[in-house]
Image (cartoon, rainbow, N blue to C red; front, side):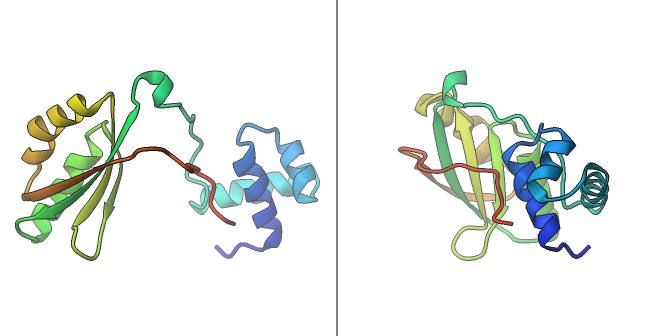
Length: 152
């Protein structure tokens, strides 16, 4: 699906306030209710809009430590890579997982209570992932920017 500038205005308004009534999004996008609603449904149907999420504050939930773990695999066959990807998907502490080019094979963002919790996660879980070769962990000191909004 090709999107035009009107679709982009809808997406910007929708990202800014996902729970806003369609009439409010339509107004911000310069459309009436029905055409806006049709465009929104079309973008959802095309997979451009994957869903809505509730954003939680990790620090207020006692999850104040973000760790970026660079993983290197021992071997790079399809079965190993797919097994590691499945393991990452099924681990709630891993909130983002990227397959990478360069020195690391994967980059994970892990959210935990504290450094001790990460050490336990590393020893008991991460080092036992399929094909694990090496892990290089970096601890975030401060979150300067975190957004789910895409620059549409």
